[in-house]
Image (cartoon, rainbow over all chains, first blue to last red; front, top):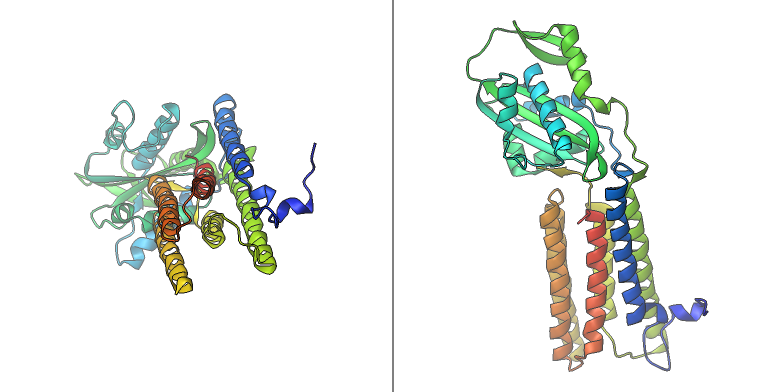
Length: 296
Length: 84
């Protein structure tokens, strides 16, 4: 068995070829390695649900605070945290985990408004923002603000009320945190009393819950009070592997470029600078641009 | 003259890939569009290789295979991190 030696990293002066580690055969091996890793991740997610996942430290209080901060910046009124909407959002999140989907409309055709009616929230206007795989509350609100349709919801002056659900569970075999944000305005304003719970302005109708019960409801949907860590953080794992492999191939091409220039080797192959540039962009993109969080 | 032509070809590649990087950044919360940006960038890179090596009279199967393999690796790297 031949071991990898220093010579394997250098271009072949006599054959005028790339190094062994950049040969077509070697590049094919790297591709197969990646395919194998991807297949292993899929199999692990299916066979051992919850082992892979996304670390999360999101909480509804922060989401509420950041949402209202954004509205205040635009000169809009603050939204009241409505216990009914919070209950509806929680039911939507539970439904997504139960039926393994992440969408505004469930596979069986249930629309978000169904959850509003289930809690007797008679709305004149309503909206829904979803998020998953984020690890911080601030990133969730930032992502919504960066997306025109979600921003329109968040900054809609017609809404009076808001409800959040931050629920941890397993979706598609990955442990994750789903965030549901419901907006609404009641068709018939009900007599309300605003109470403060943990710095949150909570709206309470005459017939709704007692203060302590509202607190319990908020705790029930805000499961992220404790930080969630899956056994393997899939984002960190895949990002690390990708950066190592991309960095390795990038370094090989840099060596090839430097050594060939130094020795004046003219090889009949692709343009080394083109490969270097593509790999450099890939490293920057994977390292700094890709975020695990998704909004819908 | 040859050197200038060579540099202009490289500039075409850098601009094209930079545009795909820009779209990749803009769609950072949309998995599907982000992956489309990667596919567009890699396709442009292979297409550029065809044109560049054809114009330089060095177009061979081995050379194009090298671009396809590297483009494939880059696509797989993104697919893995994006969870495609």
